[in-house]
Length: 117
Image 1 (cartoon, one colour):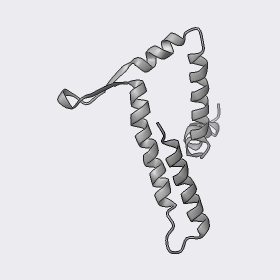
Image 2: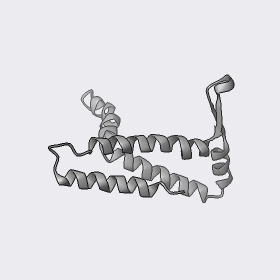
Image 3: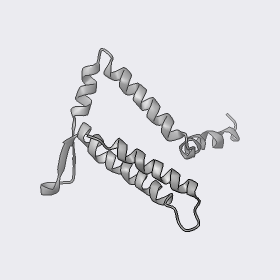
């Protein structure tokens, strides 16, 4: 292996992570793995995995919940925080065009409609 090829390989992961499509690719691959695992003969291990308890903190301030709860509640907070940041960045200012306002309202409607229980 030549030394000229080593930096390209070393930069492959950071380049992938800086690509806009990287998050979508990781989500699709993760979803496919989860579907295959949940519908395989070892699906009981999938259920057991999500039933594992995780504790954050110590003493009286410790939070102990199973992984499914952390994903459903904890990571959704992060998701809506990021959506809120994106929406606030799109908030129309005095010099914005109406297209930006339409994009913002569309995102706002999407967030509101996705939060139904």
